[in-house]
Image (cartoon, rainbow, N blue to C red; front, side, top):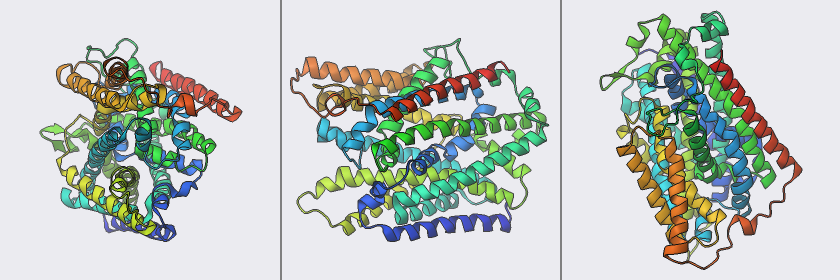
Length: 535
């Protein structure tokens, strides 16, 4: 066993503290509104940190350094992806969030029933549950192999430690406990990541030496010369910018795991701040773990035996374990326990939010519809909400034993899974928001066509960048829905539940300032990335 009793003590205190925090918060919960949206009483900064915590999962913390340091075609090109964030946030702030907040939703898929019909709502809700529980299983698995590596525990016990602890505090505390624990977890995580990077700088005699020792081909953060449309260049500039835009609009604007926190804001103005803060805080964090990836690459170059110490998976080096192996080699007793706590924090902050959102859509979109004639009491709704959280947590644990080898790093794997369906999902929502005549049949057929197109691209056109799936899936869904509803079914009815009838485009001056700030932030990210190209 690699870690000592001191390390175990640090880990146990941390996990026990989370459960105590959740138990304390659970005393205030009286209804499902408390459990899922904290009665819309939370401030934008807390909610922003929680949204970022969900993004900064173990998949990112171990996957990004592995991608930067070792993945084929990898390196700092991943930073191109971040350029899409500010533009996506502006789009959501103007066109999507105002509608959802005005309707006072708990499940974002409730909008689809009011705009289209029940089958569209249930289809998208079911799709969300399938995708998110599978992605959560990937997160559980990716962190469990780290626990196994550091502690020597069997993978089964590793999965159970992470999964059950997260389920317990999630069941007890609901969304409020999740948000407060996310703040704690992000504080620990950023502290450890900063400490690790400072340690690297000292080891390599400063930033300049570190960067100069990194391979030139991996230092290039922009790839303008390729397009990703059949040239086997997955991470070219255009697919990362355009594909990233559609992916992030879908994820931040139409995915329950994100929208649920955004709908917990006190009002629309504070909800807008969530998108602004998230964009401003996200890039520095992504840049930090990318720089750690540079440090690991340089360490591997200077210490050739390092790669031999990374465990293998199916005969190939599992580069996802490069960061944990580095931490084991470099960190002293006690600090290693804190590092493991930071990785725990990254995993839990992603898993807990998803489990709560899975429970929310199960209650709102399915169980609530089964019990319309005799509504449950507030206490019973709260009880069933917690049962749903337990159910999805157990499903994620079971699935985690069956997910592996989707891509060379878990960072690619989780984004590749999302790119299959994010574009088509966004297409359905924007059909509702931007059209009058498109009906539920057209939206559902469009979704199916968009998804099947992406499957065809995956199987038969592997040379096309998977980032383009977000764009092509959206286009296929959106225009199939229009063609079916306007031409094939000749639908002439007008549904008024869209942006043109609800939102009057009355901007507040403070909102316009936020859009300008985000545009400047886009330019600054571009310049930082460009600086690496010419370093």
